[in-house]
Image 1: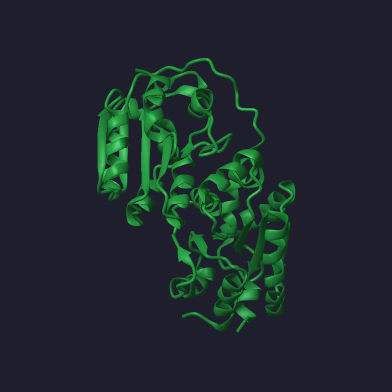
Image 2: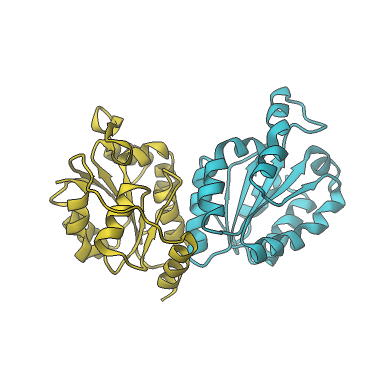
Length: 184
Length: 168
């Protein structure tokens, strides 16, 4: 299973939840599959999906799911220690770990080699870290939402993207409708 | 040990409705951070790097909070992309209380190198910039904070060594 297929299986679980989605292919694929006001698409700023989602979870009680990638988490690795040391049970970090920089031509990341992001998250102090297969991902997110416990999910899937359009929505429109969904 | 000026600054932040602050420390800002930790109206979540901190602030803003970041001017070398593609692109109001290291009174030569680029980077990014040099300059802070919310932009408040040395 590649990321697009994982996202597809996630839709029934995440469609009504607040989702902060990573830059590039992940946001484009989610946007093409199921564009919703509850999705915040990152149009730039690689690495910050985890931090933006966590900042949102820190100040309000609704569940927040950050959909990040292995390459992006490697860019902002230290935020795992911020997350671990300020735990919020309404936060789920889903790392789609396909071992590659998908948006830039599927170059290999170190997470696809020797580096285990689940082990890094655990070492940072995150208490509830699970590594699952692509097929198990939707169930893992469902369980994390039901348990209402801060969870880091590393979803090991295959490298690859599907051709979907670039997001041309105005950033202020994306932000305003997302904020309305947060308030609603 | 926190001084009156540190309490004044935090009181101005709470007065402006700031309820979420992230910080990466600087010696000049130690007193402010000390007071911050004693201020229950503000959730203080330290970050490891300032771009991460701006991500937290963006999320907090979308959650209905009014965020601010406390950082050193050297960090402007880290956050250019985040300022342009997140804070400015999505129009997020963000006061940045910045210690302006490398100005007159600076003991560490290397700090001068980024001081030379500080205002140039801020100018290049079209970020409204205020420079606190005299102790009385702090009187502008409430106005700057309300201006930041009005225009929904990142705004820089540079605080130099003379300011911190002379402020009570």
